[in-house]
Image 1 (cartoon, rainbow, N blue to C red):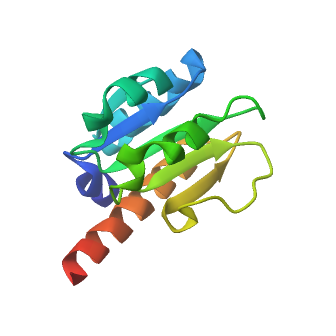
Image 2 (cartoon, one colour):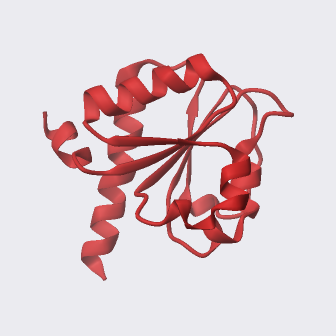
Length: 133
């Protein structure tokens, strides 16, 4: 329950081109962690840079070399200007990317325990960093 308390009231932006995977991620984060999950598309990021305002975490699924919404996100000025951490769910081997200090990778396939542990770890790190400043 401590994990759920840590994520309670947190806002998570979800980017995924895979509807079923997006629903599974949304269920895991909203049900097990009680987080508010907001789904978005790459196009909505480009059109609405304010979408990252008041977001505590961005979760992205990237399951093929051509399916890399995290790259679109990382090149968006709205992400570069904010200190929003990024959780990339992927089965791809990835090189170091820009902003790697804010990026955490979760191997696909995953289970809810792994998803929740990754998200709560990122949120806890963000809380500690905010408290230290």
